[in-house]
Image 1 (cartoon, protein in one colour):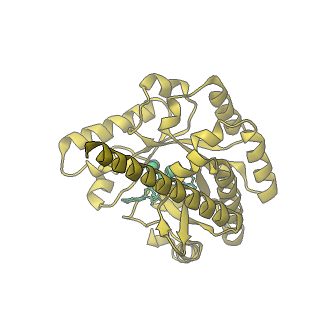
Image 2 (cartoon, rainbow, N blue to C red):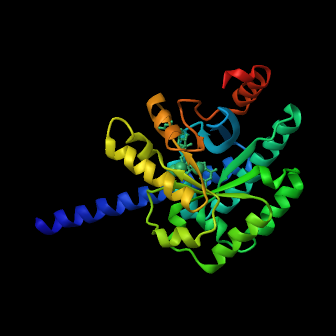
Length: 284
Ligand code: C2E
Ligand code: MG
Ligand code: MG
Ligand code: MG
């Protein structure tokens, strides 16, 4: 009897494996189709300059809605895309779309907004990345000084001389490089010294700890000081409360992003924000 139970368990396990495999294939097919059929979408979250309280740019954030599966958050499908090999094609699509959109907004409204694009460490480590970026810049006509690339801290773990070289080349083009989710990865301060970035993005996990915990404030303050000591600018992510904003301001943080100001917006809503801000500059 024991034997047959084990047999059943084995079969059950196999069935689950097959099911997981089917799901994986379905998701891969769907994501591939969504990309090919231009059904992915970018939303844009404003970045605020705390010196002027104005919108200086926006981060492009990918959205995927599937009629059967519903909204699938990027935290779930980006790692999946990295596993199944779709991430590079997605990265090129996002870069093209975001650059073209930024150029259009800047031209139509006489602005100099800087657009930030998230790029997977896998993609940036792929040969030909810089050439691809160069051709997207040429094709879309974006001023490279108004383009920012966000890379997660994770990539520092397996950083190589090649990666450092790629980042240097991107910066020579005028592109701003940001280290995303700072403080949540595994990087040592030594890596940070070697890694030629322009901006540190303090992860929301630290911003959330600001109030009312005093240790949270000490941590944020130390991170901002560290960034400034290394000549880096600081963006705080996920600012939701005025109290958080006040602490960040007090400690010299340059830029913020978060629901306190705005959620990521559709193209239509971001256009409205621009129009309202341009016609009523005091609103921010
Ligand atoms: P991220 O680059 O760190 O982006 C910040 C995330 O925080 C976004 O989540 C944003 O919507 C969310 N957020 C912004 N303000 C607040 C706030 O005040 N409170 C809270 N609770 N959340 C806030 P989202 O859009 O779900 O993206 C999650 C992650 O997926 C991103 O983290 C990024 O790592 C990745 N991702 C998104 N779009 C892309 C893309 O086009 N390419 C790549 N490679 N990764 C992407
Ligand atoms: Mg980001
Ligand atoms: Mg982040
Ligand atoms: Mg993140």
